[in-house]
Image (cartoon, rainbow over all chains, first blue to last red; front, side, top):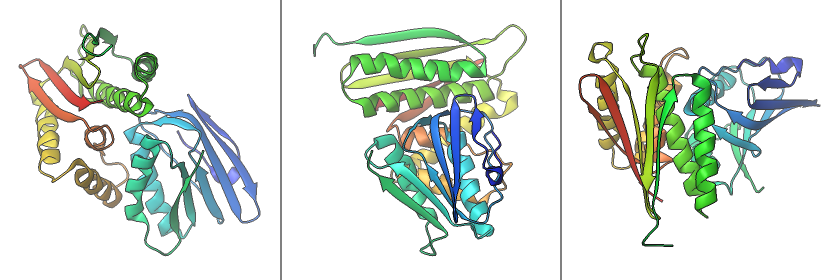
Length: 117
Length: 162
């Protein structure tokens, strides 16, 4: 799975679809389906707020979680404002994403938001 | 239904990466038909998926052995998920598997182990092996892990309350 979201192209990789919408100062990525690639990879080259939505995602494997952590670190190094939005009322999403709060540092470069679906 | 409630699944699975999600989603569908607790169904399917991925990645796959085995059984309150696959001591995977389980047990709770592993992943080079699956089984799935190796087959067992 490799996506260059700077091109604002949608991504389809197996059972995963990521719809990319670009607005003024914002790139929004909506994850849908299942992310189960053996070696997931995400690359990004943008200069705006990057907001990833997972509320409609049915499942992701641990490889995807590892990829997200690497992505969070990379976004921070590149001073990209990254926001992950997840379904706070779905237990598996809540457990997975709440654990990522350890990467929030209060500098607003990385933030997590729990949405109600 | 309590008291005479029981279930058992025992399947050989071909060593094909696509079968991991086929099996995982099938398990989720099966148990969604049985249990009202969707979170518990998701936990069981997630655990199944992570164990199958590990079997696929780290199994000793020769020319003739292309199948591993998935067994799930339990009752209304408890489930046991077992994945067995061919393994070789020489590969080092069996030892790493045992060490990973011991490492998880060394923490006060699975959440602490999970957070420690996330920190390790954040600090590691992107290309390094992440080995997050088993910790996720313990933290997100609430599963208790054990493993056994008889010299040619490794059996990974997860016990969880539903």
